[in-house]
Length: 362
Image 1 (spheres, one colour):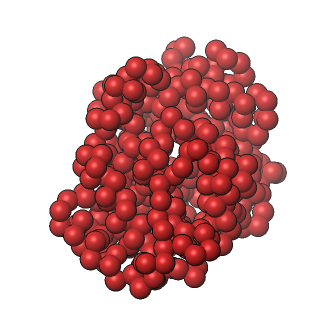
Image 2: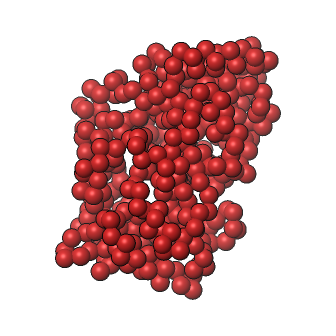
Image 3: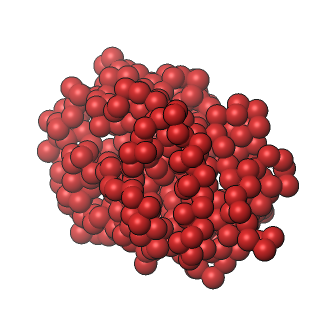
């Protein structure tokens, strides 16, 4: 039976369901539960933009789903979306959840897509369909292999894929990137510096300028506002290592022309704390983290293809070596954004995970 999440008790059931579902899977890292609860309470009970449901059998939660309606940039119309799909290995659970969702959408929209969530653009990565042998990194999703199979049995088809690329910053890759960086003809006119938290307003404004000038045809969302960028930095403050955020500027003009945002893989700690934000565990463990994840990389059109990205990566490699980082995961990158994922492969990476956004006409 399907129940709508309508109070704190059922919201707790919705949030903590994955803790038990994945308890025997060593690749899974629980989210920070208190942060997720705050986010979902606002989404479901205050803004009321989404609906969350549970599938319950014999008083036990066996599945969950969140859905709603949002404007699609590609289709220039409202579409249905779904996210937070999790289920035990029983196809009938998925049938119940998605039948409820599709019944809700009748007469409202004619197409539904997921998994992605409009209140959190970073979750627009889809269902994991390849790459189950490696742990999932910070701010990425993870699911059992049968999820995609269930969706396809329900009539969903591939809308598009997104990739993650794994790079081991070994000596060979470091030397290769260093050589490429030296071929950048304007390298002497560019200054690359880490994020300066003392002047965060200036840094945010410069990142916003880069977003506005960069190419967005391949992205779902328009350039984020200054307020949204600042809010994102504030929300991520606990996870940010300033030396892993690089901003490139022209030396003479100070004009920002590119940036990269890389975060330490705090999932290494969350796998041990089971989703609890234990400040002592984080402080004790953050300098022992061995992996990082590339969240964003943008270069303004004027410098695209110039070699600036090589300089940015050379600087990142320098910082990663100083921090003792052993692996870098970049993405998630839309499959048609060939330039972005191919440059990482060129720097010694390999496509390690594939996520699929599924769509269905209803």
